[in-house]
Amino acid sequence: MGRPRNFDADTVVDRAMDAFWTHGYANTSPAQLAEATGVGKGSLYNTFGSKRELFDLCLARYDRMGAELAHETLSQPGTTRERLTAWMRLVVDSDLAREVRRGCLVANTALELGGHDPEATKAVTVAHGRMVAMFTERIEQGQRDGDVRAEIDAHAYSEFLMNTVGGLRITAKISDAETLYRIIDTTLSTL
Image (cartoon, rainbow, N blue to C red; front, side, top):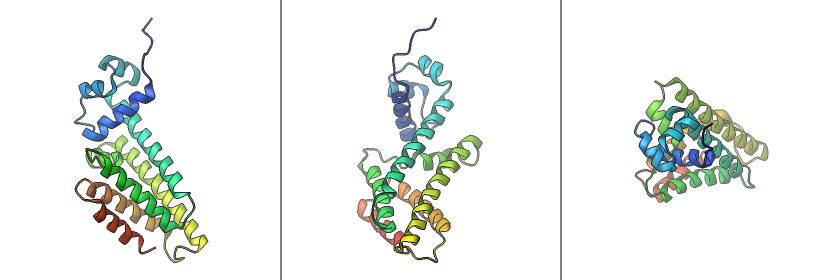
C-alpha cells in the first residue's frame, strides 16, 4: 500500500502553472517543477502522470480561471466599451504588476507549441474561441443596448479584439501602462 498524499493537488497545479508560465513548457525541468511545487519528482509523476499531463492540467486551469474572470468583468454594469476597456486594462495591469512580465500562458503556448503540437494547438484554439465567444456576446449585448454600432460584425470584431489582446500581452513585456492604455483606447474607439 502506497503512502497517502500530503499535498493538495490544486495547489500543486497552481504552482506548476506559475513555473510553466514563467519558463515555458520546454524550459521547465522536472527539478524546477519539484522546487516550485514543493513535491518530489516521483510524487509529481505518480499523481499527475507526466510533465506533459501536468502542463495540460495547468493550461486548462489557466483557461478556466481566465474565462471566469473575463465573464465576471464583462458582465458588470456599464457600456460595452467600458466593460471591454476594464477587461483589457485588467489584463495589462496584471502583466505590469509582476516582477517578471510573463504575458499570457495561452499565447506563450501558441508561440512555443502551436502548429506543431496538435494537443497544445487544440487547447489554445479552444481557449481562444472561448474568449472570442465572450467578446461576441458582449458586443451583441451592446448592439441591443444601443451602445455599439449595429453594422459591426460582432464575431469579426471579437476576433480583432483577441488579436489585439494577444499583442497587448506581448507588448506588456516591454512597454509601460500609458502606451498600452493608448492601444486599448485606439482599438475600442471604433466601437
